[in-house]
Length: 102
Image: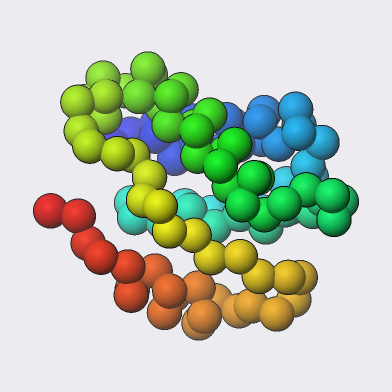
């Protein structure tokens, strides 16, 4: 869908700025989002994911009507790793292991 990925990237950057989190990389496809973030250890990874998913879901559904009629925009799953301990192969395996939506 045209524009969703770009909208997502803008929204993530905005929310991370509000949370005082630095965005190093954002990449996304039709069934995944990859974020490389830099933050203080006082930020819990689960809280960061929660805030980003909640914020982007509401905003994207408001912007793209077709998505407002679908089920949950995000799954409950996410993968967190500390800096430089994850590579593209690991991410690809994780994405491929996730259940596909019909």
